[in-house]
Image 1 (cartoon, rainbow, N blue to C red):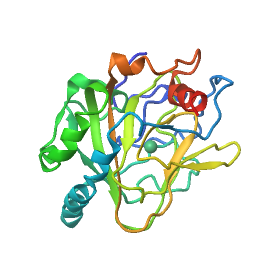
Image 2: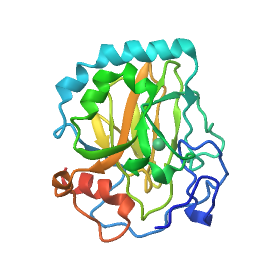
Image 3: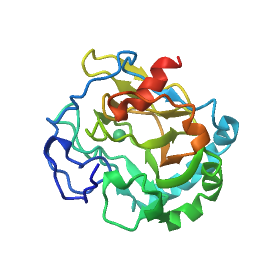
Image 4: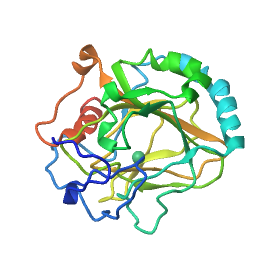
Length: 255
Ligand SMILES: [Fe+2]
């Protein structure tokens, strides 16, 4: 597909999405492509079997301490859900914050997440060197955007899609060092919510919604985008339609 820079629009295929600074209201846009009949929403693919969960859990205190230092400085960017919220009246910037571990050379475009050549480590990545060492063990041949999302206030992140381009499938791993964050997938047609029970996941960010209930204490998760290794890709089934549903097909056929 043609890549668009932030600020450009393509109707229902608007590339505005989470993480971008300018928020046009296009929340009526809906993915309308057919879905493989084997897929059931809500779903997510746990990656716990592919990563070193014990090593990840061992970073809990380390990451918590450093995130708390960021909390005190109050200098981090606010997390932005993007315009594709389930409820138009819910806040786009619910209050949670982000620490970027990699930054793009270009203005924010959600469709640059996996352009691994344009991302470089931030100074914050130096504060989280043990986390960066862990990220290096993940099944990526190269990484793009990397960020920590956190909040210390008891408040939800509204249910949202990340974008509505069904032909785009971002390869990413969402993970955390503890299970404190009540993070869920939502089938907006049935209202069914499914909470993520694993330490790590890959999920369909387009054809279903996701969000977070209010958590207690500091809640934190990390998302790393990039390109999976060729060897890892061999495990992943490819849907005949709707590339964005790839993680959903995998989740639905490997349960
Ligand atoms: Fe999201």
